[in-house]
Image (cartoon, rainbow, N blue to C red; front, side, top):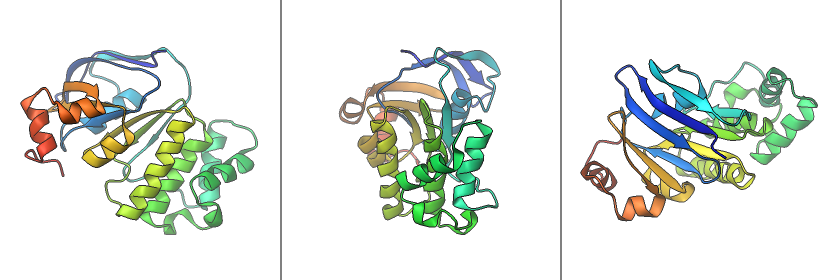
Length: 224
């Protein structure tokens, strides 16, 4: 199955014209320095932005979800935040499904805590619970652990791996090389709005084809 195709997509001067296909199955990591266009590309794929030229098309009409670096928390409890997402999707048994999602991410004991008083890592897990409750076919993750400490990062990565094991296609943007190796099956390397490389994770890290990718792996390009 081919869930997503980008045909000569361009977004102003941030994303240069590219043709790209994202298939179901293995996790796809979009790597690149800050300013490479990772977040814009993710938003184009998820439909939050419309390309200024070209087109984005889906062969599958399955449900999608996206989690951002700084998730938006509603002024209500953790449980109510998940229930709200389910109500928007018009899914039945919202409270039961929401509690199951909170259990999956380890937040069931905080179900009735106001979402906005949770720690940064807990808020990110709550955002993942909202996604989990929807059982998405594709989950887009935009730098989901960029501002988190190592413990919170491990917790988030555990949940991402659970999505992967459950059959959700993971598409994640990051500049964290270790995270890319831990969570990814393939890497798309983005540089100045262009796809310079696409390869299996280990091939990308051991045999980069372009000088830009090799420098990025060595830390010789700005990436934080």
